[in-house]
Amino acid sequence: VQLVESGGGLVQAGGSLKLSCAASGFTFDDYAIGWFRQAPGKEREGVSCIRASDVSTYYTDSVKGRFTISSDSAKNTVYLQMNSLKPEDTAVYYCAAGSHACSWIEYGVSWWRFWGQGTQVTVSS
Image (cartoon, rainbow, N blue to C red; front, side, top):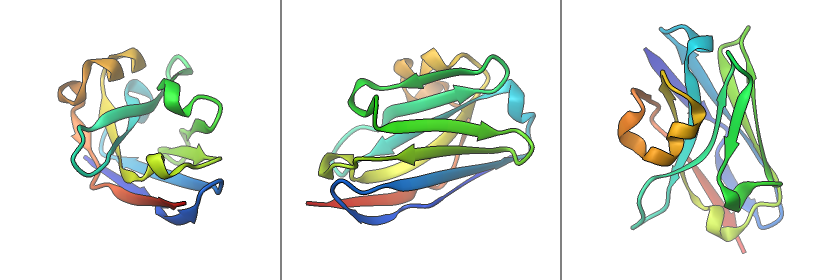
């Protein structure tokens, strides 16, 4: 099983980035794929989630209207389009897979079975 994030980088406030999470080794459509982020000195928090089997999505309040999650089952890839980025969005972004509903992202990181290595997103003011 492997999850590989890409697309992070340095961007000015107000800018955009698109993260990708390429999955392999498990049945993609049977899993919720979540995006988490962890800023220095802070706990890892759930940002967004998508589950292809029921087309359900989840966004934490701080990113609603700015971030959009999507998936391409043919490529086993989930994307996170991040617009209107703010300095407080700066963090390492991780994708994770779990065999449960997207709403479980609110229960914390321990419910997520597979994790990627993370990609750094830095938003300058």
